[in-house]
Image (cartoon, rainbow, N blue to C red; front, side, top):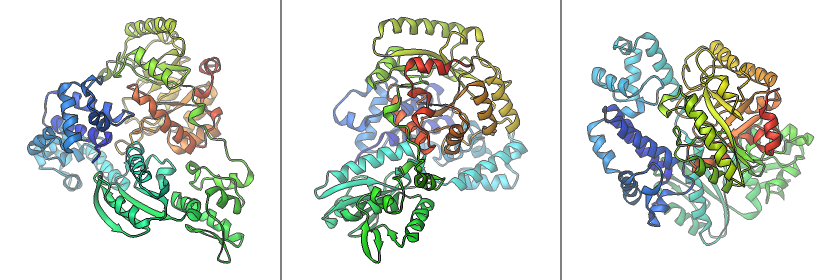
Amino acid sequence: MTVHNAEIARQFNLLADLLEIEDANPFRVRAYRNAARIVEGMAHSVAEMVERGEDLSEIYGIGEDLARKIEELVKTGELSALQDEEKRVPVQLTELMRIDQLGPRRVKQLYRELGIKTLADLSRAAKAGKVQELEGFGEKTEAKILAGLEQLTSSGRRTKLSEATEIAESLADYLRGLEGISKVTVAGSYRRRKETVGDLDLLAVTEDGAQVMNRFVDYPEVEEVVSKGTTRSTVRLRTGLQVDLRLVPGRSYGAALCYFTGSKAHNVEIRTRAAQRGLKLNEYGLFKDNEYVAGRTEKSVYEQVGLAYIEPELRENTGEVEAAEAGQLPELVTMDDIRGDLHAHTNATDGHATLREMARAAADRGYEYLAITDHSKRVTMARGLDEKRLRKQLESIDALNDELRDITLLKGCEVDILEDGQLDLPDSVLEELDLTVCSVHYHRELSRKKQTERIIRAMDDPCFTILGHPTGRLINEREPYEVDMEALMEEAAERGCHMELNAQPSRFDLIDAHRRMARDMGVKVAICTDAHSTDNLDYMRFGVEQARRGWLTADDIINTRRLPALRKLLRRA
């Protein structure tokens, strides 16, 4: 049984939530949250490190106590510290913290004064007007809680792409190792690289279906076998994720990939085009008068219906079929196009690695440049830099650049956009930087009009370069703040500002529609990892995948440029 990084992070975060509700030592709470973030951001499996006998306490931010707890989790699947805490604090209370308005203190107050343990309890109390009667709540807060409850109910539970990727790749590797399997692909929304997935659909080609299905349902992470057949089986994993495995013959593999990759709307368009040519398309192949025409490869299916091959990320019925017919599909950006990362943090603020370590890690990935963008002073929780500390860091960057031969560190800062639209640090120091990533972290509750005006006012500052995580959303956790994105794009295009596509798996911000909006309005995009550790630099993969979903090409992305060309783009006209 493999305990994935995401599961370790989930249990540490849950423990931190319970400790916070209990008013435990904040340093202890922070240690667990930091550990969760470190583990979740690691590119390699912590469980494999334990299996190899590696010393986890050597990981920056993981001390001996946390290392022992991780080893316990990996070896037993349980965390005794969490079990002890669950005896003192009802674990259901952590669900309440998924609502924007509810932190640990308010959750504790709801529990103690109204006996609220669950989301259902909270909904009943809020609808009855009992929540607004509590000290520190009020009518507006109660209304926001009800809105948050409605949002949670409508969105349902979906797995973030990064977590699904770890699970899917492990399972696919397991299947590829079975005798008789020649091909395995994870299809569905996962293959389209949607930001969240509801379940996993796997396709495999094999001559021995019974043997493969026996091994599939015996996969160590299977919690429940929902159904088992000779060509299709369904299981539910310990993580709660449902997985379907379908076995198909080689001649049907391409057609099955088309069918099970989706989306449904895209498939309808392709089947309609097939029917117009007197063809019938299903998961078994493309047929004319019951005679097999194509289906071994996806490309052959698209060719037979008069279309160029359409990349999976584009299959959402948003104009890709028409573009394929007209020969106007974009040449989507790839990882090979990326020459550097423009948003990264060090241990000068809330990162976990030094300047030198971040530089080395970026160079090892073949990057030409890396921008160091630690937080500005407004973000006190991250020990943000004031003017004096930022200048000291700039001196360190200069000194390190004098040593480095294979990469250039760019001078940057993630500068907070204050409520009045001013930037958090004076232009006298920002002018010394190569770029700024300007972000909203506070006062998310402003109206759409005020939030838009606030950000445009910030763009008026000549030191503004890139708008960081433009909507402030956190997937499955926090809705975006209200803002007129079209107006922001117009102003950005006019001023020569750029938009960030933040590749952190909890963000993927810009969202799909806004990525394409940027392309159509001539606003360049920076794909950035917002890395807080060396491993986080690998999030670039996710950023590129999300850019592809937005129809972006290498020309639409500023960090596909060589350094001299990038510097020109970073200088506002």
